[in-house]
Length: 450
Ligand code: ADP
Ligand code: ASP
Ligand code: MG
Image 1 (cartoon, rainbow, N blue to C red):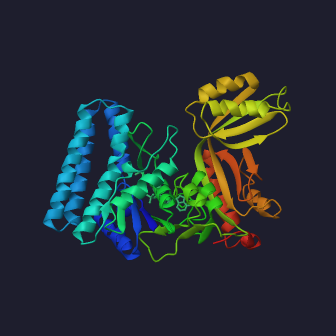
Image 2 (cartoon, helix red, strand yellow):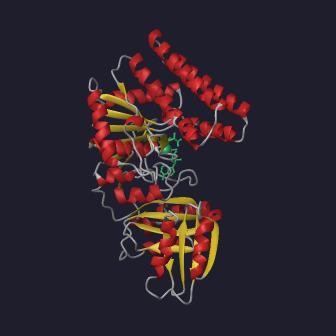
Image 3 (cartoon, rainbow, N blue to C red):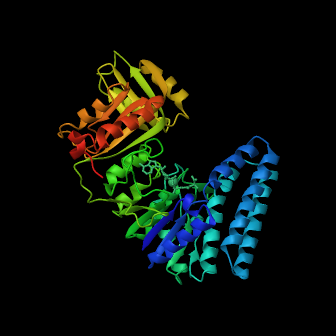
């Protein structure tokens, strides 16, 4: 079994649906196709939710009708056979009515989550009908029947496995199953989701559940690049990368992968192949366990970081002090990304500020607290074993004019991260690209890899 996940752009138009179908048909053998919503749709749904929350009914209806028109046009262009086109019309009309009914009823968090799931439900229905239209046997299975999260939003992997295997057994007259990324059920049995970009995570969870031989993530770029192509011009695709490196890069901002998506594949040792739907001939990036390099692989940046410094002359050297600090974060269900200590202070970073007020007020009992926002973590991933000479010099030489707020190095062998002002992020990514990856920097060339 293989899992093939296609992102929003890959299913963003009729032309792209056709490209996806070609890739899926050529893959052959047992496979599960996981689809995102068509590009822009989840953002539109977020917009509709915002309108409904603020009582802008007319705007919400206009957006709902706009989505319906878009889908109707896709169905018209995509499907040739009358009976299949009719099925699409029936489905889309029901869907349209359902969205309109949301406008006139109470709109709470629960309804919002139902609304957010609509994008993936539509794209998978249309794709399955397209398969039927072109004479390919396939089965549409609902992620809502098997992707389950617990009350903390964490996937219940055993439940997913158990339910998915049963669903597949029930729909065994095909070797091509189509399902939704992103959407799931929560511990109350309600429709929920795996957070923005979560279709990658769905693919990895599904791959792990069925013991897939490979998980393929098809997107709009030829694999993991050495740096963020949204901010840096001269980036290149990395041929292979280890799970640890990929997990760090995903967590620290490489948008190509959802932050948690590598973990299920890694735990089950399933290689993940990142591919470009629009250039299937490109090799892409293989994420696997045997990838052992001596080099710096890639750089990523994570925004919206807040640093908290706790300064305490009394207590820092006392044992148990750090434990008490960590407990404050644990009680407030806020995870810490980076941490550094000195004799009199501890600095740490968080990205979820939902409970910042409570955290600061509880920490005030320990000493002086300083909070700084608008920061970004820059993550450099690769083989950065501490005894490798020259790597840290190459990194920090490139950044000699940039103020650095915190540095974390040595926690693992494959990551060095540091904190800068978000305003400096683009310069930092470009300076590092020039300093670590530029062909002209001969002295560093043996430190990096393509
Ligand atoms: P999809 O809709 O297929 O899930 P995403 O937009 O979520 O696609 O992810 C692909 C995008 O990730 C690319 O178009 C690129 O702009 C961005 N990206 C950010 N960092 C990287 C990186 N290091 N390598 C490749 N792409 C990256
Ligand atoms: N459609 C969802 C989003 O836009 C999930 C995904 O595309 O991965 O966030
Ligand atoms: Mg994505």
